[in-house]
Length: 385
Ligand SMILES: Nc1ncnc2c1ncn2[C@@H]1O[C@H](COP(=O)(O)OP(=O)(O)OP(=O)(O)O)[C@@H](O)[C@H]1O
Ligand SMILES: [Mg+2]
Image (cartoon, rainbow, N blue to C red):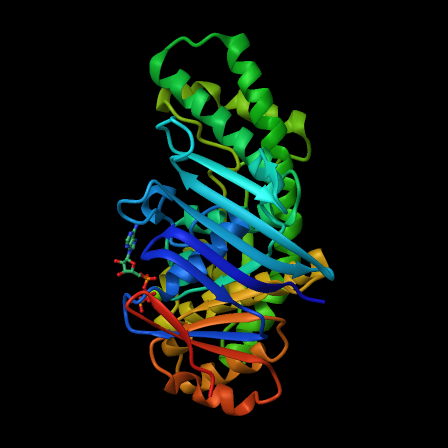
């Protein structure tokens, strides 16, 4: 079973005033020049899936210049049922209110909580920028797993929101007050321990399952040349909430001195280490410090392939793949391996600037339904041969 997008409708999103694209096919190509609006289409589907942009930026940036809001409507089928998901952001022209707000609905029914929206439509986004997940600091790595876990496990997102909200209060307290009230501090730490411990447990057990899938795909793309372990290094090695709380308590005087919260799930490290690292471990041979450009690219791709596999395992359905300009980035052997991977997937939307890079793929896959769209001057036309 797999999820399948049926149709996308946009209003005031990025370069698009309005757009309506049928997507009923196993593979949908978007071909266009730089700046034509290819990534924007995948980005919109991503927002309908996890309520944030894969490009990082904020919601305002996605509103077409001069428009009061953007709106995204996605029709898709999942578990044999058709659904319609809608999300809009900005000023509602029918109301007099001037503040930006988000509005969500599912099959016409209003949804108030983000946590009820996220994770219904499952997508895996492949981008050349994915290299940042393995090449930047721990924040990018945590962000990758946090978004994934939010969309896979009900409750994760809410715990993360609670945690971040409470963490802000704690930091503000330390910044404004050199002798904070202990009762209040304890109540904050209790909140942090409660949410933090759930997140910690999820991350530990998930990364354990994620690692073998990741390793399998690294081997597949690199022809077994590369090998990496994923090592999760928590700052609090708690077994339970109480233990987590006590660790926070222990660190209070240090935190007060430094005016920040120095331990907890917001400070945890996720390391990618060569196998076997053995006695070199004290040198901290993290992928970001020792891997070549191609090895980094391979690891980034494998992360997303593993995301696909784990999503399928957890949800019992294959997610939709959104593949942004990745084919152009790969050398011919890697491209071949990646295209081979695409054989087992459900539905994929693929952008590219030149048709040549997909010719081999099209020649190989005469068996499946394909749509080829060309994007030019904000117009999208079907160009199937
Ligand atoms: N809020 C906005 N309002 C209007 N136009 C925007 C907005 N945000 C971005 N754009 C424009 O949208 C266009 C489409 O960008 P997009 O990233 O989708 O292009 P692309 O086809 O993926 O290009 P590339 O091949 O370079 O990756 C760009 O020209 C960009 O300047
Ligand atoms: Mg692009």
